[in-house]
Image: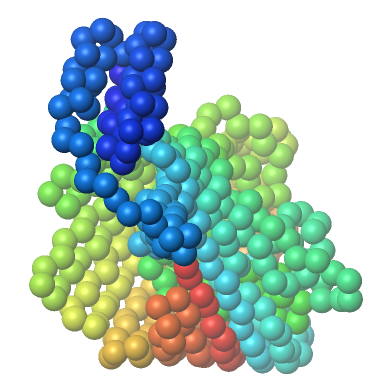
Amino acid sequence: MKAYRTRLKAAVALACLLGAAGPALADTTDDLLLALKNKGILSDAEYQQLLARKQAEPAPAPVAAASPQAESAQQSAAGALDMSHYVKMADKGVGLQIGDVNLTFSGSVNGFYTHDSGASATANHTVAGGLASVGPKSSAVRNGLLPGFLKIEVTTQQAGWDVGAHFGFYPGINSVTAVGGANSAGNPVALGTSGIDFRQTYLTFGRTNIGEFKIGRDIGLFGSDAILNDITLLSVGSTGGNAAPSNTSLGRIGIGYIYTDFQPQITYTSPKFAGFQASLGVFQPLVTIGRSEVNKNPGFQGKLTYDWKGDSFGVHAWAGGITQKHNSTDLLPGYTGSAFDVGAKLTYGGASLLGYFYDGKGVGTTGLFILSTDALGNRRKSNGYYIQGTYTIGKFTLGGSYGASFLKMTGAEKADRDAGAPAGLYDPTLLDRNSSWVGQGRYGLTPWVTLIGEYINTKSKAQGGNHATSDTVAAGAILFF
């Protein structure tokens, strides 16, 4: 009611100012003040105070009647001024302000011509979990690691809290089968349709001195900085299949880091203290790929970041972790998968250098809990890293990176291999290593549009010696608003 009365007082004050334009408007103002008092919105003291203030104002000098053309111009100017109060261009995206509520739109669109030369489809090129392309040469017009996206955010302040609702739509440009989700296998046939991946649906509330709480579906904590600082996020990287492209490529997923994924969560992020900020979350437990599970306990993820920036030198560093207990229902033992990661990005002028490393047991490779155990339920170890450098001169940026992800056999698999594989645990085609080199050039055509050219060499190697190599060239553009 206090806020409501304050707004009405402002309206009354405006009416008093308008009343100075002439006797007719002055009488209208008197009537308005009286009506507000009779309705109990203004007290007797407030009514007398405002009425005395209006009556004490000097009478305005007569104003010549304006021509119809002048009145039209004044109305147009007033309308434009009023509109500028509500509609604005945000720092990123387009913003619309309605009273105390901010509605912002941001998004991205990209497309690339990609030519891929994969290894021939022979037995010695078979790698289970390998990410190098196998098969004939192919060309595609496709999305890169990012599909397109449109993010809508509604934020305001209520009762001293900053609150917000966030929605993220991620549509691709390529047709997909739609079997298994929006980012299912590609389906390049006539009359096909692309998928829309609704990755983000979450609410936030917080205060500057308390921090922020997030509830809903959003990007995870473990591995998030690895992908968000990867140069292939803006481009293609390893294709993950180019003859029938899906809505996304792989970039460096599975070739230097495990994909963080977008996951249901309840997460708390602290305020920043001397450059440090901590996040901790409770996550929907993920099922191990290929196993039957009903998990009793949630997953947990955490991350600590540090940021510092001087006149020309900057530091962004992070350390994170993940742990989740898996309860099996397929006669295999349960297990706990856990991992940690560390990384740092240093910037100096137009140059940057990044290093990243992760190590885990029972978390798998490429995606969380993929190939994380052997056939007996024993945990496999995995780790990986990537290094990256960029240099920007004006609108041009040159970048390069190398990374690899490794999967280790369990003790049972090694024993079975050494015994000649009588138990059938040892699979010689099981992935040992995925690695890639990336060379990239970017040109900032406009503040929104970036042109990108890229070369990628991807290699996969199996535990038994099988290997595959593919070479990819990509060129296209990405737009952010």
